[in-house]
Amino acid sequence: MSGTAPVVEAAPVPSPRALRRRLTRARRAHANRTWLQVAEDAYVAIFSLLMLGVVVGAALAQVHHELLGCPTEGCGVVREELPVVVAVGTIGAVLHALASIGPVVSSGASAQWVLASPVARGGLLRRPYAAALGVAVAACVAFPGVAMSGTTASPTVVVAVLVGAVGAGLLATALATAAQPHPGARRAVGIVGDVLLTGAVVLAAAVASGISWELAGGATHAVAIAGVLVGVGLVAVVLATPRIGRLTRADVEPGGALVAGLTGAAYGLDLSLVGEVLTARRFRLLGARRSWRGLGRGFGAVVVREAMRLARSPRRLLGLAAGAVVAQVGAAIGLGSLAVLLAALVGYAATRWTTASLRIVWRSPGLRRALGVDDLALLVGLALPGGAVAAVWAVVVTLLLPGGSVVEAVVLTLAIWSGIVRSAASAPPRFDGPLVTSPMGALPPGAVGAVVRGPDAAVLGSLALALGASTGWAVGLAVVVAAWSLWRAINAVGDTRSYTERLQEATAEKQQQRRG
Image 1 (tube, rainbow, N blue to C red):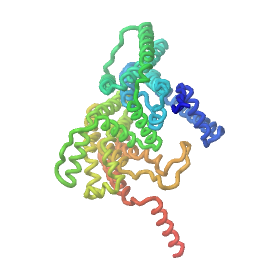
Image 2: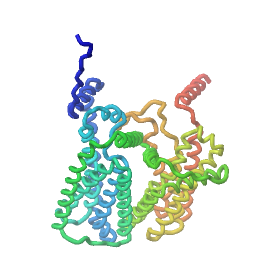
Image 3: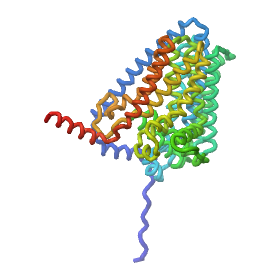
Image 4: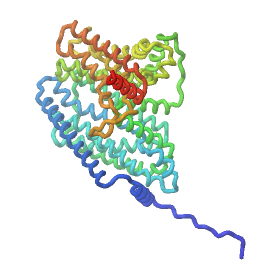
């Protein structure tokens, strides 16, 4: 007998389909939910989507009726030119989102275990690629389709635009997929998206100013262009599909982590956390930035450092410009006094990012104590640069709105500042106590109310001006709302104990009252 060891044959490498079947069987074997529970959740989801569709459909029908029945020249320009603006902006937003996320993504567990197997990686990533295609096409079709609901275009033109939107979605996803493993190309795709978004803002400003244009060609040319765009998109998708297998785990895992973070923030109804996740992702991709030395001490140092932080985000100027254009468009279609409320809400949404530091510091008792500044001074110091941005934005919007005045600029500034301070410095939801049952599942107490904290102050601060009250009442109400927002922000950090400690103290007080 020879002393050589027997040769063991290697196990055959399974196909991607076989591996997915094995994973599916393993998940089902360890599932802790019955088919009846899954069917009940599916029923609730379908019913909720149908109800949401009915509400959205009724709102769109009302907007369609109002736009078609509006006799003013501004309504006519917005009705006919707005779909072009929405289409350009949607394509730019889709390109920017695809370049930021992936578009092909994978979760951390899948990237570390499934993608590390010897199975062909392209077969495992085709489903995320198909999901990205579906989301991009749906977005490119939905928003221009809604914008075209108020136009007087012929059915042929409407169909041609929607078909062309499908081609644009396919082409955008294919380009982003081809550029995903190359940082320079990926950055170029994001820049193209920013350029399109900037173009959409410029076109919207032209529409709000009453400038109209007419595209050359008729329905026949529109159908031909849409067909060519769909053909190019399909070819690009086919050419980009083989590149999926070349993606590494480093290419797909960060996008999966970003999607998971955004999903968690959205589930918690915390829109500020969504912005913080995106900001953290942006600076993580940058790697390192040049540090700036602060000035002063105490309150002055807080104000200077916060102003430096705002200066590091020049891309936010596009959001501020878009908000001003939205308020201008609202005034152009004849909203009247409601244009003030629209400007307050849009201004709040456009400037909310300026108080991100206030939100972080106000929810970190240890960090707040380490700064060595009084709570009121720290609150004002962190909110003052955001108030300056809100004031500049309010002045610009007042100049764009017809009949704008100094009083309107002051009221808008105070209303917007009250909203962003109330939203950033409000008490966070408590996750250490009992949950509240809702149609969306179990939520911590105060999670739903956190969504309206901020917009409510912006609306209340500008309500008197929107109702046509005198100057004294309008400014007085705005000042009262601003003072109330500051008072609520200070009280929000008055008790930083856990829910259990506060519950024990409340129980002890009740027992003492009963004995007394």
